[in-house]
Image (cartoon, rainbow, N blue to C red; front, side, top):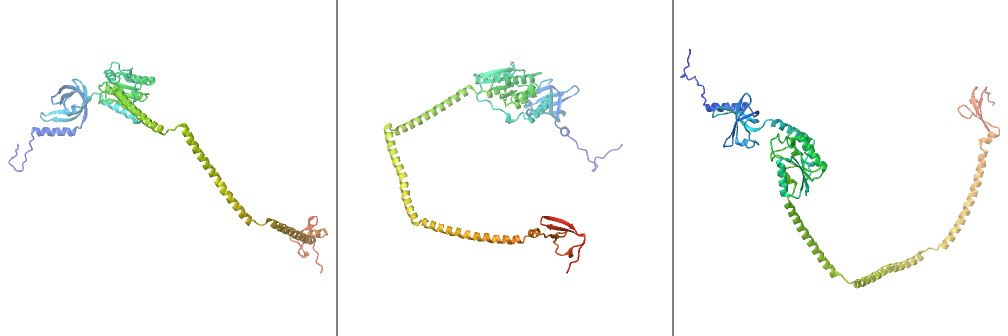
Length: 453
């Protein structure tokens, strides 16, 4: 056995925590260790406090945990859970310090299975957006004046009554065509798409409303199917989607040309109130009446001005006759004056030309005499040239080698074509070319004799 002297100054007593401090540290440890996480379970012991906070137990087959959802988060839940509901909560694991109870603080709540549905919703939305199904450039404007409206919904749906009530109130003149289709349950999406295709094929309405009342994501899921979205995009007329409440969004909303917050809002967007049309027509009629009055007034003033300027036909003819005479006189003067002026000028030019014109007869006589002298001189020179040419031709003929050859002479050349003038350049067995008057011959040399002195 041993003991510690607590009076020893080296001894330090361990810190003593309060219960509050302990619970706070445990709470911080839990919050740091467990980030926000989705937890699925069944609602039990649900209580809604006067403060607006929700208190309940989330349990499964083997365990349970206390949960609290404060008013600031609960008001955005979208529904009030009931005992036994299957839900999924996004919560922070913590500790309620006042009692030391382990619990979860719920940030968001949804019905069980909604997470998978929401993921499927996002995947389909992303796929169709990538294919251009939601492009704003493809959205068609609603017609200015709607004469007929088609409705795709269930005949038993409250949404149909809301739409018909709104149309009777706003536009009782509009014809309504119902294309019935179930809005919930198996094969509902295919039937909704078929009803939209039928409306598009018949083309008997100006705008089509696809609607149903509010509900859970499961209730609205038929409007999140690809078949419905593609049918809306392919519809021949503009489509207004009025599915659920203002906070509900479906794939049909993105594919439609216009989304309405509710079915009633869809009816209001599809039709212009009859009173508004009457007021607009009355205003247009007033504008037209004032425009016509203004045009008639201006035309009356113009007519008065023209009537003051109007003359009798006889006076107009006399005035035009005087004007015509004046124009004829002006035309005559305008034609004759240049002719007279140019006639005088022509006479002056003729006189000047006569003074400066040379005596062509004397020049012609001189030219004829010079021509005769030229012809005579050229004839004498030509005769002299011909005589000289004949003499030179005779001399050339005497010197022509061909004439010498014709007298019996020959020209001898060696193999290189050089003319031979001396026997000393000839060797035995040389081949010589002998040119005669009528041709040439090749001659072989047998021997060469000495040249005599």
